[in-house]
Length: 570
Image 1: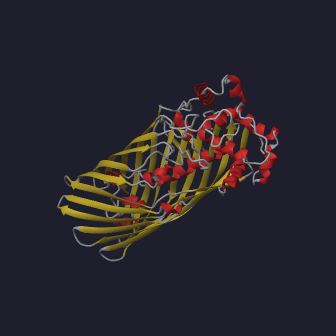
Image 2 (image 1 turned 90 degrees about the vertical axis):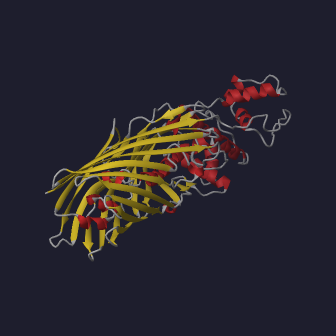
Image 3 (image 1 turned 60 degrees about the vertical axis):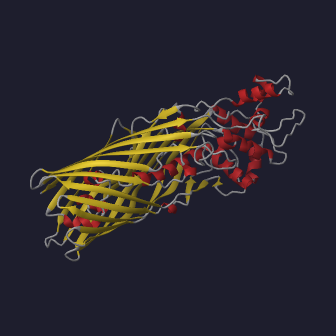
């Protein structure tokens, strides 16, 4: 069946792509800087100490003497997804039904599936083929009901991709980070390096829940472990800074997959092959197909940051920051454990000799094995970004910051996966592509077109100096999504979002400063039936993973962040 064939690979591909899109919504959130979080990341013109290495390297020149930073980020992300009632498949009431026509055109989805499934014909025989109600009942019983429909699924414990350890589940998401910086002897330059997490997200779902078809466990980590940065005071009012970042990048995914209602496209394509035998259809539209596990890493992903800081006068400071594009050459292992029904379907292709026909159509012989394992490679692009900021001293004790940010997500035009050997799912995907006049797959490679968009977003933050030792902060950031409406899913279910934050800074003594902040992120998306090509598409020949065929769904995300840091001179 079409989707049962391509489902495993596409589950992985769409998992990967959706996790890529998380970068925009995670941008700056996992850095763990209390000042940045408290000001909703509006810090391009008011950089936060050693964390200037990430936000604006020019700000590092404000470091005095020698300084060390230790910080912790505690995060809790709650994702709730609600499914509605499927609007498809079609039945005999939707398509003209003539019991005397052995080859009706068009034919309803349920009727085609019934006609090609001997088990259904045995279990739900039709005594009177002219009785449309009896025919409809038999077809509906054969097709079955989607167990995901009208259910709710929520996430559980957080999961992260840990270097050399793979996917790891934890009761809480707690990230320790830190750095050091030194002022030059002349006071006109500074050097520093920090360890931080530009991107980090992970969650788990119950393996038996509907959401597990788009991520039972998902973990993404980009860990910058070395970031040598230099800042120089060019004039009394103008500073510049630049740094190189060396990062670990890891992605891990564990997900169920199933043959959704769109499997019938495969049957139609088989019927288009002249004189081809039909396979044994042992896979129902909502049957579980198997379990995919994949872990990929790159230990050495390099990028660079550049920033400018101009103190225009005593009440206005302007900032500019640029982060380069970074590429992670991900490599790792994958395994797919198939269910018996899927294996029987593949065996049907072998026994009928149909897999020999597939080779003529850019496919190949199928393996029909319980487990397929191998290695996989893919390129992950962290797109370049630009930020502009202004910091205004409105009152002697009140400062207001405003930022505008741009990220080039249109760089995600295509995603390519290269496998160490031919696979059943890619073999059939390649055939279906050939029949549909598309070019998305080869037996050992899959190419997924994307439609992501560049984003502009803004943020505002305010800082009030309560006294000489205590400062209060608050911020707001509406975060634009890079994911178009027709690409929403459950793998990373955040669309446009809003970040609300507050923080405090306390100068404990002349060498010690303590910072803390809290943040709340909220997002709600609603996807109509057949709207998303990454989750519930109804378009036949749409080569993406759609486990929720024709089923509307909603996602609600509530994220809670707490950041604490200690800066100490030595």
